[in-house]
Every structure is written in structure tokens, then in C-alpha cells.
Amino acid sequence: MIKHIQLVRIGLVASVLLVIVAIGCSRSDVEPTPYDRKDFTPIAGPPIFPIIFEGKFTVDGKPGPKDQTIYAEFIHGGSQLSKTLKGEYIHVILGPVSVDDLEHGAISFYLGTRNGDRVKAKETWEWNTLSKPTNQVLDLTFPRLPES
Image (cartoon, rainbow, N blue to C red):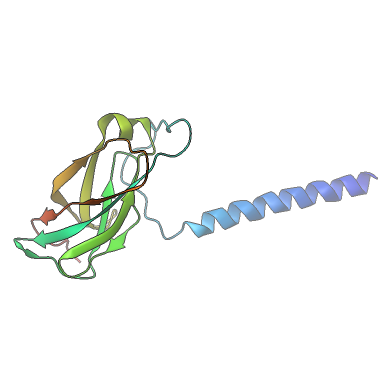
């Protein structure tokens, strides 16, 4: 009986470790945001609906090139990295994840990567809580391309 209990405990510990490893590996392609998360206070309750941004983008007054990395960020929340089309971007999706995101609500847009050179768009978007996921067309202006 004691050996059976020990085997069950070992099995439970092994199962928990496998779940932790699987979760950790599934997010390995996501770059961390550069913000300090020490003061992070998550939003209570269910997740808030996101905005799905798309629009035209220019670099130094000309239509932006395809295959550029583009993303958006709040203070703590950020979108996944997306790739541009010639002069357009699509699928930049994000919603707030912290109390600071809700209270300060400014979304900024970037070309480049979170850990490398990144160029901020002139435009920002002020967050308003939504009752459903919403598509938003927003044209963006960048002064230059990020360094490779």
C-alpha cells in the first residue's frame, strides 16, 4: 500500500513537470517586452476583448516594404510579431493585460524587434474598452526602417 502511494506521488510530480515543460516550450518564439514587470498588476476578471489593427504604412514618406516585422505595445501588454505587406500591415492584435494598460491606455506601434533596433510610429492609439473584438484601420508613419 505504501509503495502504491509513493508511485502515485511520483506519477503526479512527473505529470506536473511535463505540463510545465510543455507550456514553457510552446512560448519560446515570443520575444519579451522591454518593460519592467515588477509593478505588474493583472486585470481582474475575464480577458478584455482585443483590437485588431490594420492599415497602410509609410517609411520616410514612401510605401513601406514587405516582410518587415511590426508589432504594438501597451505598458505591459503587446501583440505578437506580424509581417508587413507592400505598403500595408495586418493582424496586429492586442488587448490590455494590466491595470496600467487600462489606466494609461496608449498603444504604440513599432517596426523591428523588441530586443533589437526598433522604430516607433508617429501615431499612437488611445485604448477604449470594447464589448467585442474590433477591427481598426490605422495608417502608420515611420521615419526610417530599423537597422538589420
